[in-house]
Image 1 (cartoon, one colour):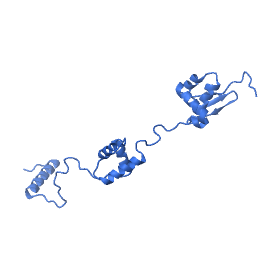
Image 2 (cartoon, helix red, strand yellow):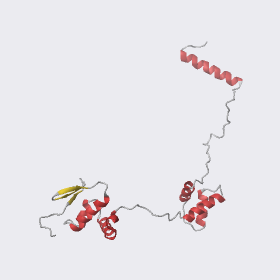
Image 3 (cartoon, one colour):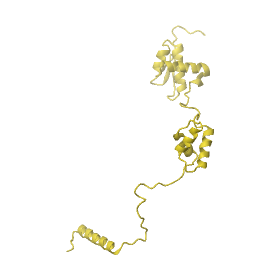
Image 4 (tube, rainbow, N blue to C red):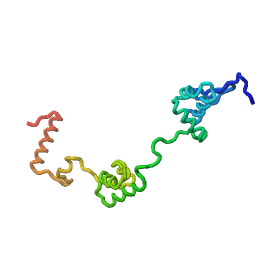
Length: 189
């Protein structure tokens, strides 16, 4: 089938998220990144605007446009789906390193994460103290100790049966009478 000269290609309206053609339109969901990227490639490769203008229209740079084009050529439309960013594997906390952290925790229950990390580094592993802390937390190997805030542990505890001495009791009673008298407006003389 041959297209006539006056037939023009459908255009994507970025603001309205709709593909508009000569005989109608098609809505594209806002969160459909694959369709948006495919439409950009179609406009850049098949339209009159070219790759650079198509990339700019869709909010991408030249380098990203060509990365997406290569991904499309290799894997089709599924190649346009965004991938998870960052490392795909635990290249520092390998299963062997995790086993060694657990082993050290059981061998020396008082060892801190810093000490364990240092021992692992001495044996050739490249692991940070924070990674050791993560393993300890992940496997629930940390001790559940309650820490007393500074200054709280030095006081003598008075139990519920504590009775103030006679002088202390008289002083408190006098203070109580004075406060009550001033509160009601009477003065004891």
